[in-house]
Amino acid sequence: MSELQIWILLALSLMMLVSAVMVLLVRNHLAAVAAASVVSLGLALLFALMRAPDVAMTEAAVGVGLSSLILALALRRLGLWRLEGAKPGRNLLKAQRKESPHA
Image (cartoon, rainbow, N blue to C red):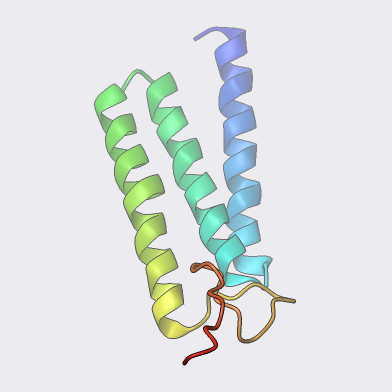
């Protein structure tokens, strides 16, 4: 293993560690989901650097893609997906509809 690969592995490991701590410490649930997906992305990159492309692609698809989507949908279902400071009646996932005068 070259010295550059070792430095990249250390940087990825540090990024994953910081993201894992952020998952535990952030107050916003959406930020925690994003930080968890960063951990999975770092793990997929580590697998790719260790020459395991099949495992890396699986981790990227399941860990980053599917798990993040399921967690985000669960937050929406539980009503915990709102950002802090957002208006209470505003839906972040749907465009604002104009009220028709005939309704």
